[in-house]
Length: 578
Image (cartoon, rainbow, N blue to C red; front, top):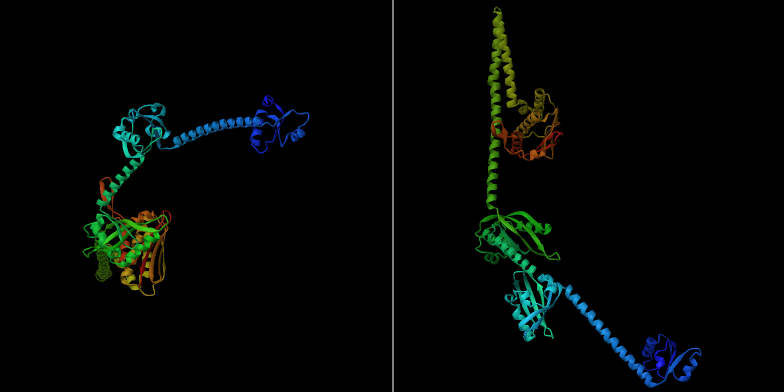
């Protein structure tokens, strides 16, 4: 069999061993003689018959030889298995270390000395290096209290000793570690290994604690605002129960404390003077998701009425279901009272303005009539008398006749001037024939005075408007045409009067240079400070526009102005006839 162990090729027969480890034995022989051909036979005769006459080979029939081969095979297999296990252990260790190093948590392994009284760092992962800002090569082998001098104050040394003595894992709760080099919050779990080494697994909680601190401060600020802000803050269920109330809201409704208000008010509906306001509030907030500046009259606890302005929005869960409403409330009772008083004053001023206009028109009519009846008639009589005197002074000197002629001319000019003044004060055509006729008369007079081509178009209303309406529209027309002559540079003006849907509409449109509508939005500002050589002085502006607006309002009408630079201006007045 010495020859068999060194055989390079040929055929090897294994006889009588077909059922016992043949495959393994063939593998062993192949490893030792790669070029050999291994054949299996039941007996020698069968093997010899199969053996090629030109090939070298061997037939194994001896049981001891076969057993020896199997023993060798088993030893080789054991060695291979040990090598494989060793390789697997190395791979497992590498995976374990890679796993530890990939984790962000810190892991430190301590060796114990002096029967668990001192501890040195045996190993640590990258997470611990990052947390503690150290390198493993700089700290491995050193005493833990030398690397981390604050560990006694931190309390971890006592836990290390206790875990070493008892073998029971412990949790060292979150605490602040500080030394001259580093500071941070740590959460530690400690275990004892069978080898007696202590493992500390911990996390850096510094960011979380800082976030908690920031959140705590934010909550404190919010709480201070919540407790001390002058506006009411609330959270309510959709069905009207208070979930959250701040002191300002409770005080706003007359309660001593938020708790008293929450316990007393079971349904917010009871606040509302008009229950429909609560219905309107819910409809708005559920359709829009918010309400802004919602104003409603509500009951104070003492039964009086207050005005509340609410800003609120809906808070929903992740499925979109309404959880609650939250927002702010402001007591606007004083503002409402001031607005009401201001409105009353405006109404009084408008009534006074209307009365003044009526008085002005009456006075205009009286003065016009007085000029007609007294001054006009006297001038006419004076003219007649002078003409009679002129006819009787045939022998008078040329100088006397010249003076008499001049007097007659002056009387005629004065009479004409009186007629103009009477027309300006109160055109008789307006009283006698109505608004459209009065506008046409004034249009002709305006065109002669200004040289601006004016067209007056329209139809008389089916029923003649009241005197106050005719007066207001006629005076608005006069003011608008005066503004056109002064400021527009227009060459043409169209005045139109029409009735539509029981509304009498007057429009005055020119082809002038127009102006910026932003100015119109602020045309009711009365006083503007301008700089001139004498310094600041008050200057009244846009009184014409203000006067037109007030005249329109006095007859329950409204006025609007349309204009663009370079495209003229249009004034439109609508007055209801009914």
